Image (cartoon, rainbow, N blue to C red; front, side, top):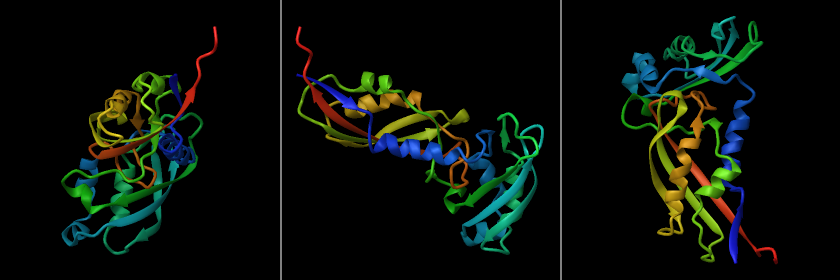
Length: 222
């Protein structure tokens, strides 16, 4: 009896949810990196180890860059996050057509973890995902009775949102090739350059959850 599987119901759904969240804002083709955010981090907040959140309202110009940005929400106030967010927004750019003169909201989240170490993106917006055929090709071809598989990869986000240096962080069940299969999918996945909650992704790590739910099918009679 052969095993086939449906699309990963939980893990892939989570990826698609992140992608759908990003559809309300432009797809940024250029964005600040973790290093850019660390350089722009307000000195007062950096010294105190304080994080912050800013919501910007900006107008896109003919080049697809935010202009005339105003902070419509800044927490905490008085720490310089609004000014730093506006400087970071200057590094954003979209190639989406018909956006000249459009007003957009841009969240910017300042996390002290961005200042050093290996920050992990909390709300990635996925820019590219594997196809059903890719999932099918990556799955071990063995009828071993397993019908529920969870794999989580941890990867570095490189230029353009590509994933590098991926490693298996979770594999259930282990030792049956599911982790290796998931690693084969990594080149098919790209993350957006700016996360759904306003964090840079280039230079950070990202967790990629995959959930395979399998169904058995009986080969057609000849």
